[in-house]
Image 1: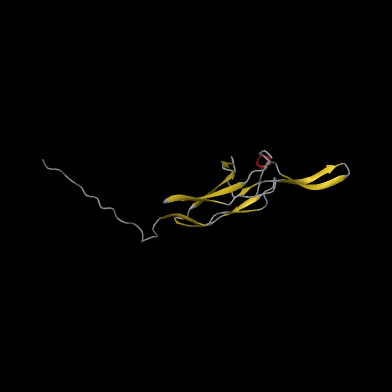
Image 2 (image 1 turned 30 degrees about the vertical axis):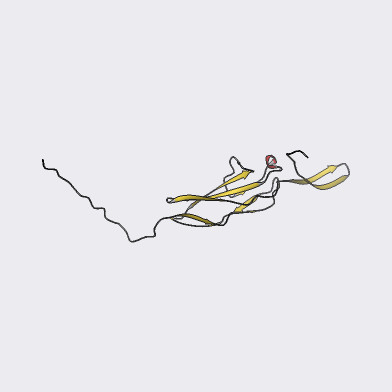
Length: 133
């Protein structure tokens, strides 16, 4: 019984463009600023390569726990952060893959302020200790 076979040949369109390459991060992101409640920290991205150009996302962590909603390059510590260290993870993604790098930790988050004890005013650093002394 005769069988009809049709062969299709795919034509290459366009010129020879750059080959796709998964993202590569060189180094780690850096956190700029003081780890104090109410003061904004900023993340400076590590160097990235990849084709096509990767898309960047951020995630801040309190200790090892992701902070809900903290997904931009800036984060302002809140009272829940007192005594904890913070890090930020930079993730780079393109059609060829994804890679991430995590910053060094900040110092423990502190609360700095002025307290009025009658006529005596004093600037103070307060650090919440979460463990036994």
